[in-house]
Length: 168
Length: 97
Image 1 (spheres, chains in turn yellow, green):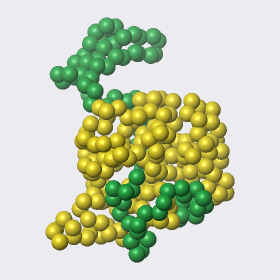
Image 2 (image 1 turned 90 degrees about the vertical axis):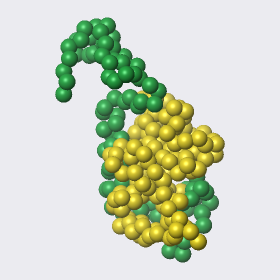
Image 3 (image 1 turned 60 degrees about the vertical axis):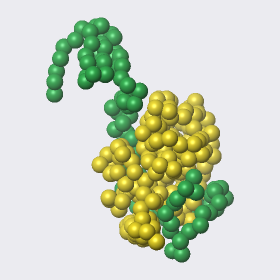
Image 4 (image 1 turned 135 degrees about the vertical axis):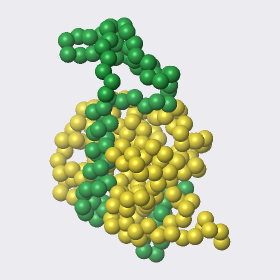
């Protein structure tokens, strides 16, 4: 076993103890908006929260951004090649897209906005007091799983909602 | 802050490869054209600030969100569960898509 394989433990107040190795670390060379100084993250899953996963900051364990994986087909606008260039070369299947800002809403206002909008979305009620899960479709988190580099891309389409019900 | 006065059609250069041009002024609105290398991100400030706020609120706030997500009906969990550690927590690797 090399030093690189040594198991490390990330202690998160939200997610508990997470074992990881250095190869699991994902670098965001420019951080993400709101956390521009943070560079190193882990993608942490919890089976009971599936399909949601958490982008957890190694440098600030209290920072854990819930993400929902997005199928590329659900993206109304794909980030340009130029926008993804900092992530390095990758085959299409190495690029993973995630919608950030999972939040719980107790009304259907966002759902109505989504249905009226150009990007028709289905409301996904999660059965919590008729709550919806709200995600950000304007600025997906994009990760190259081969190079372990990530970024948050602000898509140029201004009709995309920053807060929308999660796509079905 | 550097403050410069420009007329319609006049330009500013920022570094070697970013150029701003004043296209039009109508009342309180100013139309600007920006030429920059394609790897330079250009956004309206208010959009960036909104995304900053959203990220901070989602990543730092929402106590109990993890538990709330965990209570979501199983039928909404369409992805196959991934191999997990004994404590139910795992660090996603290549298969996390």
